[in-house]
Length: 120
Image (cartoon, rainbow, N blue to C red; front, side, top):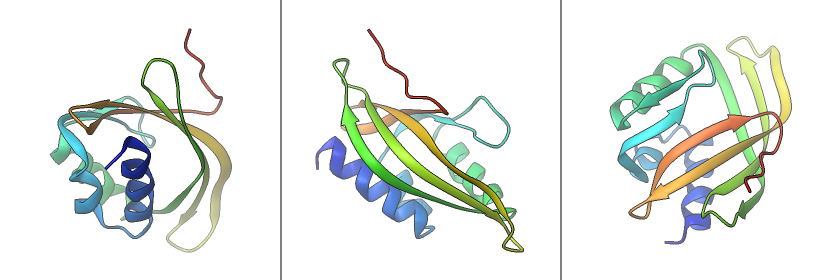
C-alpha cells in the first residue's frame, strides 16, 4: 500500500471511528499531534487513548482535499475539518494542514498547522 493509500484509508477509518484500523497503519513509536491540548502523544496506545477521550466530548470529521508529497518524503494533507460538540453545536469549520512522516511504511509522525508549511 502506498503512502497516499495509507493516508486516504486512515481518514476514511477515522471518520468511521474505526480507531484500530487507523492505529494499525502507525509505527509503534508514532508521534501524533494532540489537537486538543497541544504537543504530541507518543505511541499507539497513547493515540488510541487520545482519540477515545476526544470522541467522548467532540464529534470531529476530517475530509482530505488533497494529499501531496514534498521533496523530503513528507506528506501534506489539506483537510476540511468540521468539529461539533456532542449536542451538535458547530465548534470548528476550517481548512487545516496535516503533515506526515513515514518510517518502515507506517505513519511515524503527524503535525497540524493552520497554514501550509513548506520545507526547504
